[in-house]
Image 1 (cartoon, rainbow, N blue to C red):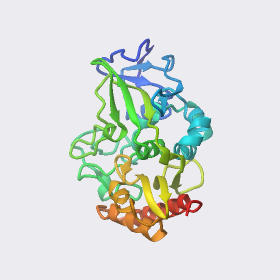
Image 2 (cartoon, one colour):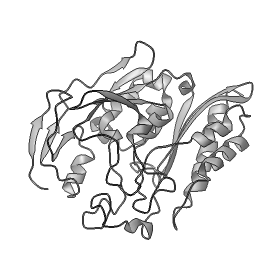
Image 3 (tube, rainbow, N blue to C red):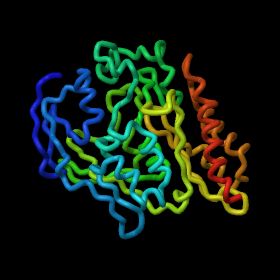
Image 4 (spheres, rainbow, N blue to C red):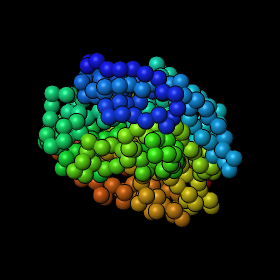
Length: 324
């Protein structure tokens, strides 16, 4: 690990000079520094900023400070009651020890676990633009079937971000040019030919909070994750879903897929195919297939298409079971 300067932030809008990065829980950044993938000159610790509140918003909904630990957010009674999909997604991620350290803001910004990105000696367009993407012809079993490019087929690893995408969360940001807010879907970008940029954040901008809108459909929601072992493994596919059914018809539905694209994938095609339709397993399966029609799998990851289709049908069927 290269040497670096360490200091503590005194305000969210503290600017960052070139070569400096924010440090929160450090559960991803420190790993990347140990591997020589992240090489900051300065770490600016934001843990002493007052960003650890979970507060109800005046117009409804909940504001989650970016410094809230994942374990605290998962256990919050208001989150468990109004947004169970978020609590379940948090508990599906990492280990208990890591959840006690990881923060809301840091979870949103964690980097891909593509094996080529995680090896500083390997070519990878994410850490050395123009060096190539060996994953396309190499080990890509866990990588993207949606939204990838010739330059990159990495997947976003967060479970929490998939749930926030289904919930239409809004990200609060502060930085040298002032405060702004954006939908979580606008935080992430597809790789195109510049995969070194994961998000739309400018250098020096800090995520200060995540707003969860008042969303009645979210009270009936769930997160389901497929992985290679039962504990402490990243998803090979996941589904966040919320569903309302009236008189046997889908009145509202929210869907997002994880581990299938470079960003959490909002399944708008599937949602449109379901609204107003009978809440049956056959319809759920067909809606997922409609969303996945855009998939372009590589040699070893076409299994994700039936995996996501079946996960979607299973979780929506479960959500509809006690209201039909």
